[in-house]
Length: 86
Image (cartoon, rainbow, N blue to C red; front, side, top):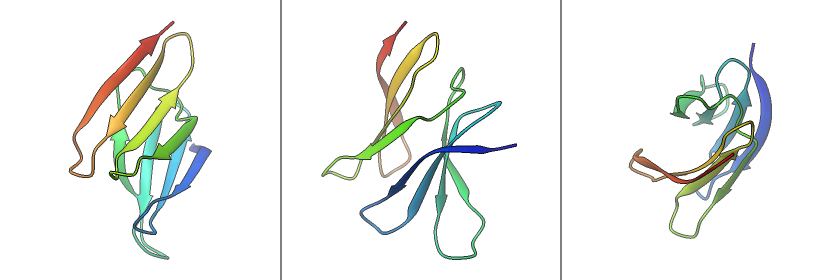
């Protein structure tokens, strides 16, 4: 089961959905009726609570649990962990 925790309309007009459950993921909906594509998941991430887009097109997303993390996802799909706490 997927539970939605955050939504973001990207600069390109595509819908991003932050999910939670067994595994936290970000899904992107390309167009109405299309199947969502996964653009982010990471080991130990159970929820994606918040997403924001920076002016250069990167997506920042965070989760907070016993060990929270902040990730940066670049338009080319690469990502990095910016911060870890907990």
